[in-house]
Image 1: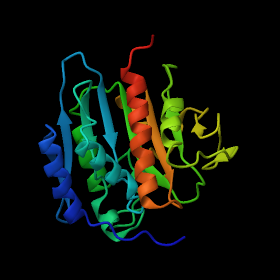
Image 2 (image 1 turned 120 degrees about the vertical axis):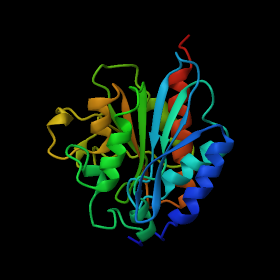
Image 3 (image 1 turned 135 degrees about the vertical axis):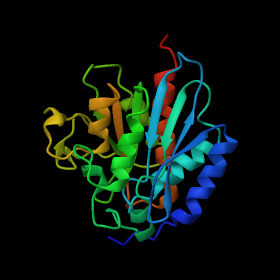
Length: 252
């Protein structure tokens, strides 16, 4: 696989901050790592509005998700239908290096059960101050995938958003149709629904921490790194748009 070109957090962070403030978000710094700010952004609607959380930038070799979140901010997607919590860059040192792990070689997305890294300790401390969310979306990429896919953790069996998300992504890239995706049996084309209790895992990704502490409904989106960056960005934007629209639009 061709290495991912370095992503410049020093340029992206202020660009995102300016766009988010113009869009009505409030910035909250919750940490710093090697001179890079760790920022969260909130935008509150009516007290009874659904509360939605979006994260990106967890792995440094997955640049499409942060660009997708920035594009959605700039296009006004995060509107008053919901209250929003966004963490756009969780691993700035990894993004600067173009590597999955952070500067110390730690995979931050395995550090949520008993956090050891400064980034995840700070992120968890911030999350502990937030309310529960109606749904959460963690945006990622997979260099082995041939198409877009997602994980769904939905222990209360709420109406799924998976089909809507995949239909959105399919407008810009293929859907993963393998029977086994990321080492797990697919529940349907492009959908992984873990059967065993994910809380029993020795190492927790962000999604499992969120499912345990903050939400009954969490999604992890995975775009295929093999595709050009613009297609991956567009797929993430469309998947998130479609999933959120399905959640916020009352059924008829």
